[in-house]
Length: 224
Length: 190
Picture 1 (cartoon, one colour):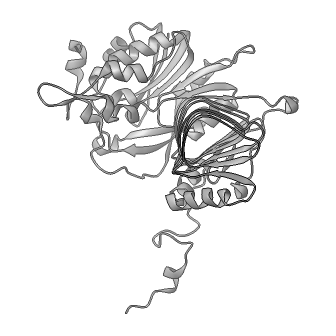
Picture 2 (cartoon, rainbow over the protein chains, first blue to last red):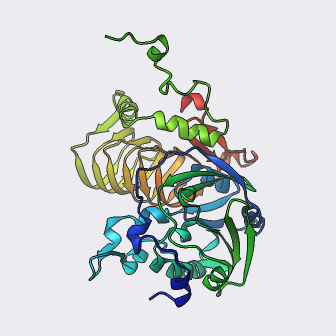
């Protein structure tokens, strides 16, 4: 059951998990780059531990650049492509009204399944804007559980719907404060979160810092 | 019949609208551009040429093995395996038709096909663009092509012999990004 807050803030075009499916062919758009203050802050909070490698979970599409960047800084990198997994037919069940819905129990049994306090940092990118609504809150709860106390999360939220100019991106770390972006598919935004909604979403976390970009993207660094 | 224009005969220029020197400046973008030119046929050709070598064992795509696979020679594996694969000091290439559910240990591991299981290489792992790996990777160096699917953890082991060497920056090649304690190889050899 979704909260009233989440229900109110939705700008649904297509309900349910099918809304996150590509509505056309995958676009091979060229790369664009953007400066990311949030990424810079995120990386600054990751102080290397001499005794143990930092564990970082990347929830975006498999990115050789991110793996290279993070492992080169002696981090242990975990990768799960959330958007790809959500689209897998084995996680979809047919509801009574005939619509397809995500089987959350099955999804979480096979995805984002890690012990408590496993990660020092999680890169969520802008996946929450594209995920089915039923998945967002449980996912944030799981992220809270998986992060170590003091662990940090980087997430992006679109500030307004720019239609086709808001495709789902793969974000590659080019430098400590620069991202390269490539649109991966024609997945559509499922909703727009405003500041209050984001505060509510991460209410169990210790701190949230917002960085508003010129390209209608709000970067949020959240600390557990 | 129309006569082809001279520039249309240039096999290097796959896109006549685009000049040949228009490759993007950044290594990541270059990787994406070049990987688009690697068709599945190219992947199969590359993998097949390796398997044709006389000193490389070959397991064909119709072979199904359940159990433990060990050996003291390089191996090209294009079939289905369920169990364990241990090649210790040798190279293992999983072909594009390979479907592996196994824990893999080898010196070098090159994946073109699908693998479910943890892989451990004493030297290098290569994830080709056609591959899908669900499992953890432990290696000294890893090369990942753009388009490869990976779900799991990557742990870069430090080379004890080269421990005194400082970690070198990321080495990028035309076909992917390589990371590790030392450069994996140059762009021309990838």
